[in-house]
Length: 209
Image (tube, rainbow, N blue to C red; front, side, top):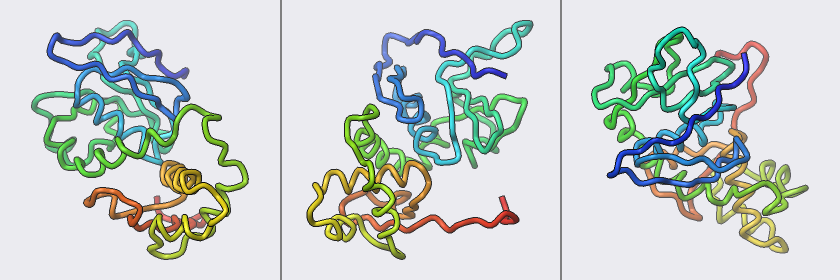
């Protein structure tokens, strides 16, 4: 099945349009309102989500579309998401849990549970501008390999004294974005140069999913 196509944005007079660069899609997306922006952040920053589409076309042309806000591919499984004022309790627990082929309803309470993480990635994603803006090149792998248990971003920058700190920091953020590095602190503390990161444990072929 081909990926859905993004439909034109349709916003209410009170909603603010947000034009944001989506690194995973390598294009700009236009989002209507704060909740749609925050749900986009969760999809873009989640390393298990490989592709997604905003305001996707519904796959069954014989049905009336429920007008989902996003389609996403997470760990090879399709997920359809819709913002809703009163979502199911199970959706509030885990906004990205697939309940296929049903539509997952997401309310403001579910998003607010991740507000610190969302705010952090709203600040981090702009580092990952259009491809080619910054050439990480051969820097990316050494930066990831330099990370030890609970190394902070400032420590990593100091390990590369002849390299522009912005490039090192961007390499760290790119590694977090790809899931090669992890940071529990991004879940509950505002990010800074002293945010601690660690390498993602390697999984064997029989590791639990």
